[in-house]
Image (cartoon, rainbow, N blue to C red; front, side, top):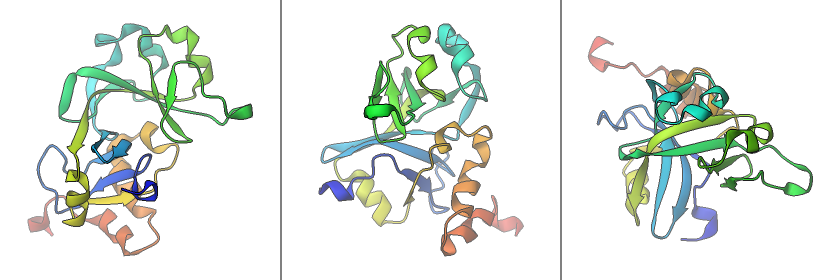
Length: 189
C-alpha cells in the first residue's frame, strides 16, 4: 500500500449499511493503517463510567464528558490515551506522547499526569480499540460499510460525542451531507 493510500488520522464513519450494534453509527479515529492491518478508536461512544474507576490520577485531566470511552470491541481490558498535540515551536512532540499525525497522538498513561497535562490541551481515555487484519478495512470500505473522511482536531474530543456521526456528515460538501438526516429507524419514516 502506498503511503498516500493510508488513512492514519482520518475518520471512519459508519454508513447506514453497517447495522451491527458494535459499529452502528460509529465514528472511528484511525490511529494506524499499514500493510499488516489497521486500528483506531471509536470516538463517539462514552461509557457512563468515570475514568477514575480505572485510572484515578487522570480523571481531573480528561476532556468533558469526563467518562471512559469504549474504543472498540478488542482489548477492552486495555486503556489508550488519545491527546490533541498542539503545534509547538520546532515541531517538538510533548514528552510521553507518540504523535500519530500532526493533530493527534497516543499518550503513555504510565506517566504521572503532572509531567504531561500542561503540554496537551485535550485528553480522552478509551477502553479497547477497533482493529482490522491486512486488507480487511479496505474490503469493508469497498463494500460500502465505511466512509473515510477528514478529521478535524476537535473531533476526538467533542463535548457532545453522541452527535459526532451527524455533525461529521453534515459538514461534508457533497451529497454525503444528506445522510446526516438519515432516520434511526426507516420503518418510522
